[in-house]
Amino acid sequence: MYVCGVTPYDLSHIGHARAYIVYDILLRYLRHVGYEVRYVRNFTDIDDKIILRAKEQGEEPLAFSKRFCEEFHKDMADLQCLPPSEEPRVSDNIDLIKDMITQIIKNGYTYTIEKDVYFSVDKFPSYGKYFNLKRQNDRPGARVPYDSRKRNSSDFVLWKSAKPDEPSWDSPWGPGRPGWHIECSALSVHYLSSSFDIHGGGRDLIFPHHENEVTQSCAVCTQSNVSYWMHNEFVIVNNEKISKSKCNGPTIREITKNYHPLSLRYFLMSSHYRSPINYCSKRSLESSSEIIFYIYKTLQDCEEASSQFRDGSYKGSIPSDIQNLIDSFRVNFETSMSDDLRVPQFLCKDLMELLRIMNIILKKNFSVPSVAALRKEVHNHLCILGLMPTTTCEILEQLKDKALVRAGVTEKQVILLIEERRAARENKDFAKSDKIRQELDSLGISLMDESGRTVWRPSMADGI
Ligand SMILES: [Zn+2]
Image (cartoon, rainbow, N blue to C red; front, side, top):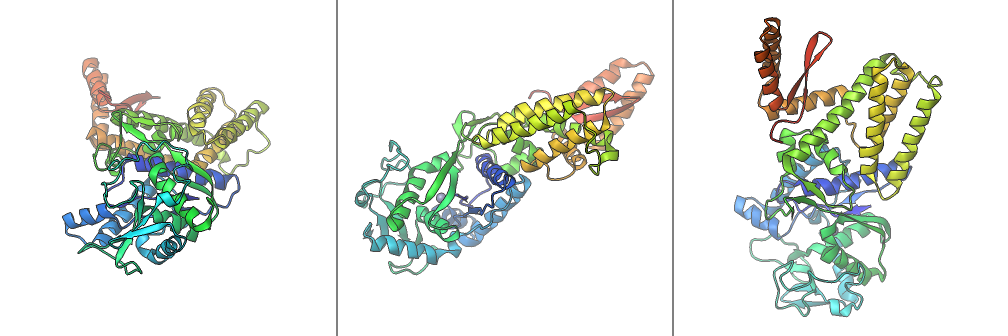
């Protein structure tokens, strides 16, 4: 599987998070069903935006982009996206990109203007037909600044000659660097082969990037080499597509400062990858934080209720109705996931239904092996989906920590307020005890009186 990577000139935003979570889930699921997956994702670590930003910051372009590659890795690790098998950077692979350009030139598809090498789409009659698109974006200036020297406005650059003070590499066409599209053709052939199974990327890459990729690969091998193309939809923020240049989408880092990365992962998983997802800032994250707290709390309650079966020794003693539940849960998971990754169907319906039943069982005079078996089942499926990075206990603690950050209070202050409320209640000062509860509630901290003691948990804050 080859997935188009980022151009690291800034922190990545929520749209990147969505794309890479989609392919992470596909990767995890394919491995779960037994495929051996080689996953390649590139870094466009040299391009115009990188050079411009690096200049503004007074940094050397490749050092600048390297820094943002590292930031990207941090975000991906936070979001539980598994690392690719190979993560080639353009700057490390110039030779093989030059080899492909040489081949395309040899096959007669190019022309050169002032040491810039262009692909001539007029020499490739099926250009634009692979994705069968109306080329509505194919207007001069629609995507890239209009270059009046081009023979056809759809012609695209394979090799850009170097301007003064820009990083450049020697080539038969003079010093310069590769155009954007050629890297994915060259890297996918080199790190996978000329034929491979899945090519992924955001929907915005279909044209011109992926059309150009197919065109270049065909210009070298005479046929398209990808079995399945997969494109994920956008994240919409205030009815607008996110673009880094407009700065209208939050960065992953801005979100994970206040919310658990799993809240973001869950939120982005809760829409099908081919549907746009509407991000309504805090509301989306508060609500997914609530849901994931519920998921892990249910698991923790089950762990406590079935601690003597932690080793899995309950086998054979599960009532048949529970076994049936587990069996259909598994079938539903495989059915949904195998049908074009219908993750939301599983998460929002099947998982929620099983958790609801688990909570009912926990309140009744439950059978311990049943609780242990159900817990194990949910745990295993969360692992497959990258939603079980550590123990439930630790995740719940982390969720509480983030709730305290959002509320702007410390746990110590919450405990003092709980104590103050207890004293007020003892003195029958219910107005005061209610006030304390309401104030904490409005901050997203909910108090619960449980068998003689008061505990707190995160909840939706006021005004959300
Ligand atoms: Zn690409």
